[in-house]
Length: 89
Image 1 (cartoon, rainbow, N blue to C red):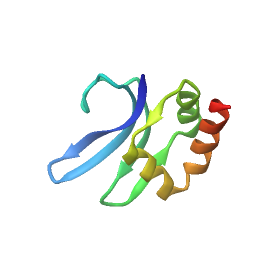
Image 2 (image 1 turned 45 degrees about the vertical axis):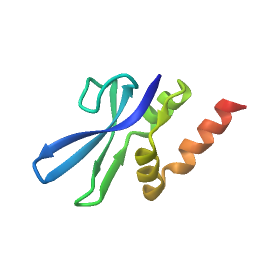
Image 3 (image 1 turned 30 degrees about the horizontal axis):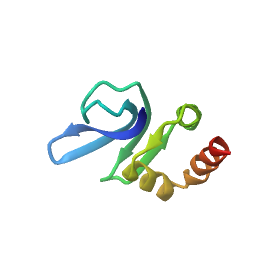
Image 4 (image 1 turned 135 degrees about the vertical axis):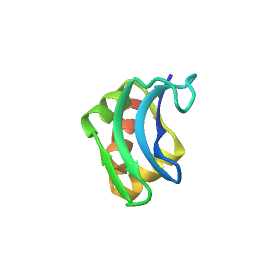
C-alpha cells in the first residue's frame, strides 16, 4: 500500500518537509517512490504536483492525516476528495 507522507529535510531547528509517495512499510526517512510536494512550516509555503498526486490517488494511495490537513489549508482538498469519491463508486 502507498501513502502520501511527510519526509523531513533541512537543518537543525529549520525543518522543511517533502511530501512523498512512499510504501507503508518504509520509515519516515526511507526511500520514496516519488516526490509529490513540498511544505515549509516556517515560511508557510506549500507546493503540490497535482497530476502526480491524482495519479497515485487513482492507484489507491492514502494521504496521512497531516498531509490531508496541509492540503485543506492550501485549497487542494477538493481535487483530492473528488478523486477518492469517484474511485469508490
